[in-house]
Length: 325
Image (cartoon, rainbow, N blue to C red; front, side, top):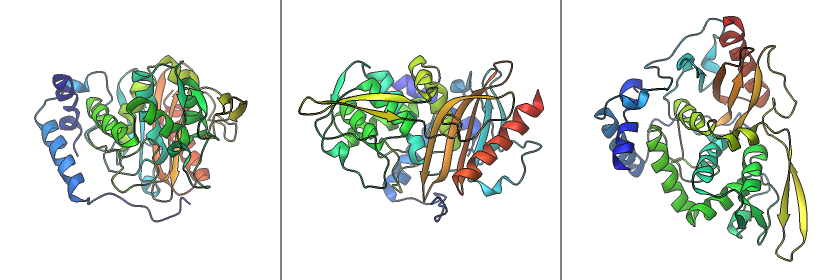
């Protein structure tokens, strides 16, 4: 295992270095985080570039005609998977807050280590969220399959589902966060540090646009992950502590999948994951295909509001995919 992680860390040697709230670029950190980063980036610098095979790699920002004025965003990227090419990259390696795009890592670990048919008992901690924090309606003592929790996590972006999954996999959120960081490093995501499974704000919880691409690129190789993010809705079944069964309908939070926004002609968006906090701005990462079924991953972080987020994503689709065909 240690050898596998060492090889994966080599990517950094190639790459280098309402939502209207106060955006924050993580230029400084507390001592424990600095120590974490120094340790992992030092390892990365000495491990070579083997991990870069079959991945889109760019050492610097990549310009794209037709997608200028990008400084209104924190970061953005468009990756063409068949040719392992970066069509566009802006601040790909800046440390940024991911908000609920975090949940792709939670889903990745649930699919890697969990059994989709397992029934999870929801703890009181998994229901302890503020009224303005998104939940899927879980109650203490509920019995829910891991598959249904994943649907709630990836579609409605339920924070309660994230905590329930973390406790099922690792026993606690803290232990799960350690696993998230270990697995992130194994994927080459060395600019990432997680402290929770859902992405609610913490100054020590951050990632990069490129790291999100690395994680999401692994997720979309999983048939169950693709099945879930491609849904237009899902009816989750929850069995209460008293044995009563109820249903909760969850629809995708991303505007393409829920019908709020149309992608440009010739581009099919299968799905993805959104994330929004005051500190992160509005974020989304998506899997899409063009008319030739060529696959792409696109990511935008730090848009000032959701309408602008999807306006810019459509501009990126048009400049990077439609105009290149």
